[in-house]
Structure formats: structure tokens, C-alpha cells
Length: 246
Image (tube, rainbow, N blue to C red):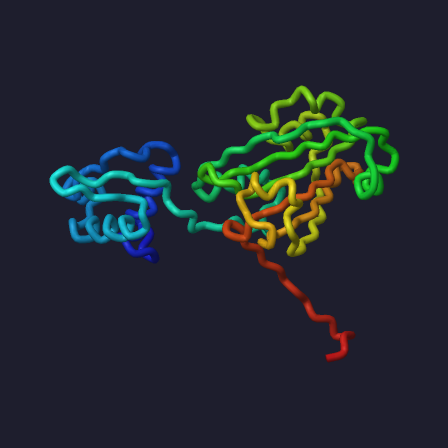
């Protein structure tokens, strides 16, 4: 076991992982304190401490004379680090944190680009717009509006973006982004998506603009991505120039 993390906390994380992975479901009975102590080579007081803390969180419930049961999905404690993820898909980042990842395609349509989209793809007569909802443990987490050029992804309307990764598809077409430029701002979610994301009109979210360039340095992706702060963290590094007045 990791000696830098208290043993009771390691046991809590182990139980939560089993719930997230579906090995334990809501309503399932946990092994007895004695059995868990023997299985993990720890004392029963440590097991009891972990169970009590998970009861306080609402994840477990103990029934006198019956045992301890899973009462709810565990709370999300890990946040996704958005500034140091390379080119991992969002779902891969979520799974990397040991959380359950699902996604839904809300809209996939072919349209004439206009406004900001036309500025990104001035030589394209059509683009595909893909609106996707990402969920963590069945709770809405991020809404993404992806725009990709029709000339490079002509069969995108036949691809299942719920089951398979967008970047896997782009890779198959020979135009997976190899360079990504990202801009972040604090913004409001478009009103038509408030109920989908289950947030209020005045609640702010992280708004990322992603510009993805392929190996030929051509723009192949422009994505508007809205993330709930509850599950998102990021960091940045600044450098100071000697030419800047203090």
C-alpha cells in the first residue's frame, strides 16, 4: 500500500473504485469488517473507520444485524487537470482518474459555416457540427460543440461518436490533431443547454476554445467546450521577461 496515504483512506478509495467500476452496485452488501480486515491485512478498527467516514459521505449505510450496504455513487473528489493532458480525449482523461465516463451525441449535422466557424474554415463549403455531452458517474460534466471540415471528414455522419473517440476517427482519416491551441475564459453556458447541464442561468463555467492542427499544420478542429468547475482544475506557468518594467 501507498505509505503516504492513510490506510483507512486507501480502503475508502478501493471501495469507491469498485462502485465506480460497477463491481459493487447501489444496494449491494459489503463483506464483513472481519473479512475485509483479513483480505487487506489491516485491523478491524481501520476498516470501521473507513466505513464510518463513507457513511458520513452518504456512500454507505449500515443496517443493524444485517451489514453495510452501498447507498449511493461516491462523490467526485478528483478533478481533471485540463492544462497538462497532451492529446488525450476527454473520456480517456476521466477514465484515467478512475471515474465512470459516458457520453451522448446530442446533435450531428452538416451545415454551411458562418461567423466564427467560417473564419476558422474559410475555404470550406460545409462543416460537420457535433454537439456532445460528457458525463462523470452519470452526472453532466462537459458540453462540447465540435466543428470539423467536411472536405477531410466526409463520412462523419456515419460514425458513432458515443461509442468511439473523435480522435480515433480523425486518426483513421489521417488528420488527427498533433498541435492544439487552447484559450480559456470564464463564461455563461448558452441558455439552450442550461437544463441539459443542470445548472442555473447565472452560474459560470469554464469555456475552452480548442484549435486542433494536423501534421500538415492545417486546422482540422474548432471546438467550444464548456466544463463545470466542480470537476475541473487547471494550472499555468508564467515567465517574466527582463524587458518588462516592474
